[in-house]
Each structure stands twice: as C-alpha cells, then as structure tokens.
Length: 397
Image (cartoon, rainbow, N blue to C red):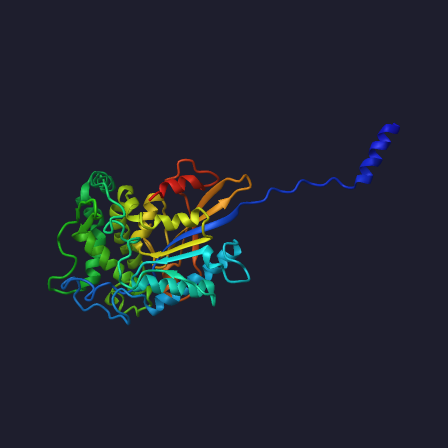
C-alpha cells in the first residue's frame, strides 16, 4: 500500500502527462507552372480565308496575335490571386520581395507571351523588381520550338501509331460524322442566311504525318472549325458586344460547345506521348528547376500547344466553365506543387488554375483551382499525388 502511495505522489509531482505532438502536415517546397498567354485577336488579318464567313470579321484594337488590354487586365487579376496563394503556402515571402535567384519566369518571344508575363508579375509581385527571361520579340526561342531548333526529334513511326490510336477505329471520317452537328451549327454562325458559297467547306479532315523535325499537321473540316471556334471564343472572352460575337449569332452555349473542336485537335495531335514529349523538350529543364527545388517558383508563359503537351506527358485532364473538357483557357495554367511529407517523401500535386469564360468576359471573378490526378503516375498515393521521381522521369528532356 505504501509503495502504491509513493507512485501516486511521484506522478502528482511530475505534473500532467504531456500529449505527443501531432505529426506536421505536408510542406510545399516549390512550384512549377506552365501558363497559356492571355486573350489575343486572331494571329492573321483577315482571320480566315475569304469565303469562310459571309461578312467581315470584327476589328480588334491591337495587331494580330498581340495581348489585348482586356486580356492584360484578366492576367493581372490572375497574378494577384496567384501571388496571394504563393505567399500563403510559403513559396513567396509574406512581407518582402522574393529573392530573384529563387524565381525563374520564362516567356516565349511573342508579344502576347512577353506582355502576359509582365502583367502577371505586376499582379503577383506588385512593386517588386522582376526579371523575365525571354529573347527579343519575334526572335525564335529554341525552348518553345525544340524540333525546328534540333533540340529534339520525333519518332515518326511511334507518332503515327499514337495518332492512329487517338483517332480510333472509325477513322477521321468517323470523327467528322460525330462532329457533324457542331460543324453545321458553326456554319450557321459563320454564314447566317447567305446564299453564296460560305462556311468551312467540304474538305474532309486529314492529317499530314509527323516527321523527325515537324509535328503532324491538320487540314480540312476540323482544322478550319478549330480555328473559327477559337476566334469566336476570343471575341467573347475579350468582352466584345454580343452583336459582334459571331455577328450576333453566337451565345455562351455555342462558345462552350464549339470549343470541342479546339480540344479535339489537341487530343489528336498534341497530347499523344511520342509527339508531346519531344515538343515539350525545350521547356522541361525549366519545369525541372521548379520540381527539383533549384528555384522556389518556375513559371513559363507559353501557348495552348505547350499546355496540351504537358497534359499529354503527365496524363492530366480538366474542365473550365465555358470551355470544352481539356481545352486550354487563355491565362489557364497547369500547376505542379512539390510537397514534402512528414515522412520526408516528396510528392507532386497537380492542379489546373483558370478563370471561367464568364469571369474573363465580365472582367471580374476570382480564379478557380481544380485538382488533377496525374494519370501517367505508376504508383499514385494519397488521393492522386505522385512520387516526385516519377514525374521527373516523365519530364526527362
């Protein structure tokens, strides 16, 4: 009895038993981002060959292919949201300017990509100095054109097999049949009640095979439809009066449905691995800088094709309100976060960040982030996260 009383007294003197500290959660170590440029007009003037539309295409206030004023404002809003998020997760410092050595912003040499980088940095970094890595405007950058620069080569046989698999057993004619109602709707928008020859034409969809130095190329119905639908989407996103969007014959529902053409083009020609990997090869070193933690943030300002390439390599899928599934939105981005788990393991979390089409048009509305499973991952863990080494292996130049 006396022994028991001594034990109780000793415990009382020691104070309350301390609970074991809870295990710390995952920490974001670094982030790699590949972002499409903001809203632009068509890259050519006239926008499409004569006879495609019954009337002249709407005018724009900037040269062909340049970032619009409305597009710049939308990108700045994205930058503000991204800056808040990057500070919250600790990738950017909360109360001071980031160390330039810990951030690498790369832009292609087109005016729209350089200007997008500038607007994003203005929103995300405010008055902090920011260096943007880009070549002089319109000078070809091998990082964004690795095939023509000789940095990578396509295996034409592997590419042909991958494209054939994407096409499916009914061939290109089957794709045209499936898309026939959308072709008809687009022709109605392009031509109205015009009695003269007008519209997408009758040439069936065809694909010129890839070579070692060049990606496969689309022609015919799907090629023209993809271009025309993207122009209508950009008119709508830029806030043009509805009387100018598709000559007053296209509504928001049309824009979303017709963006299927753009997504379908990328599904066939940009996402298949034997095409996607070599065409992305010039940018993979920059992505790896962020994933390997050599910089805290690696941000690339590129094009929709780059987005589709990375999505194809990693097996990523998304859906933004107002767009077809997997259609890269203006200003949309694939975000790859490196998480250090309490165990020390490093995992990658993927998400797609964009504004809805309505938010772009209206000039307001926060960006939305949606998680994406990395379907190319062989050993996914914890709800779709992927071991870092697997992602790095997929992104070998």
